[in-house]
Length: 427
Image 1 (cartoon, rainbow, N blue to C red):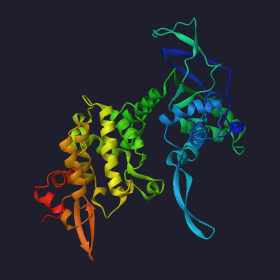
Image 2: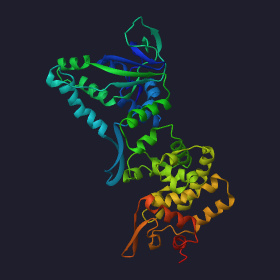
Image 3: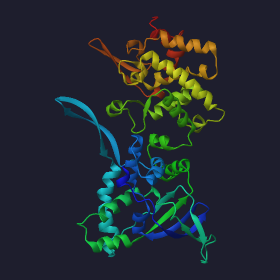
Image 4: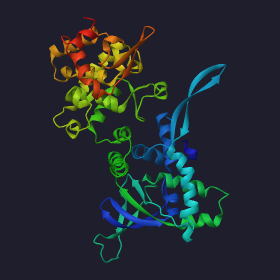
């Protein structure tokens, strides 16, 4: 987002609210207040992309964009489509609306106009409150108001010197209102009714980026479940995920942070592994392959783990693995058994020797990597999954990691077993 079209920096304003604690207060405002005092999420999302590309952005947007990235799902997502350029079909990355965007400009917009804005009984509507964030603490002035039953004070908050805030919850409602306010086809009287409607706002000020990430998890996961990979990607309190990002970041390997499966679109963007699957590989180093695939509280615990040693071990061992196979693309290669979860986790678990600085174990890990035949064949049938040979071509239908992990661990770590001998072409 260029400076010329960025949001206005400062909106001189104060607001009175019921102080919940030093950094949190509750207030009730006209809906218009949201338009005037909150930077739209779509604008901050655009700013995120511009920052990533090294382009200039409005200073306030630059300040709020990292918070927004941690607090919200996207309105637009990158997708790859094929276009004809100079007579050749080439993949091109474009932005497509997510369900969040479609709901904001569709059903939610309609609801605000037909249910929430009207005053008639037929138009009765209820709108959830908003949660707003300011990274800076606001200046406060006590207000001489006593309300029976309220122990905390009423306080006037001044944010005129710091500018507008961002939303941790309510972006869709904000965008819908913004589009309505800008639509000349909507009657002025109906707009006015909507803008005058009162809404509740929970305001958090003096909040760090890490706290903003925690707010997203608490608002969107603890009360209403979201998919595991979304929570994992944004929860900065998860040390396993932090270690995973550091290890794969050091290796220069991009991870997919959305969806339940790796897709062609992910691969075209150079993403060869889901974040949560990469986390399993990291956990296998210290927790072992079985706990790496478990979702139990004991398996999630990081008590006693030296995360700096884990990072070093992961970078060293995974670096050797991907160097051996010629890059992370092997994780999407259907002709290689390392593509399957169980085999991938079993191989990753050999990194325990690097974590414990076990020289003999490191030698065994390297030997296993070199002597195992990682090509899908009948030898792997029942180890990584079910193998079917058709016209001389072996294909593996990968089983779930939990179903096949025992055999996979035997095959990778114990050359003396039947499975170990089979994958080493010793039988």
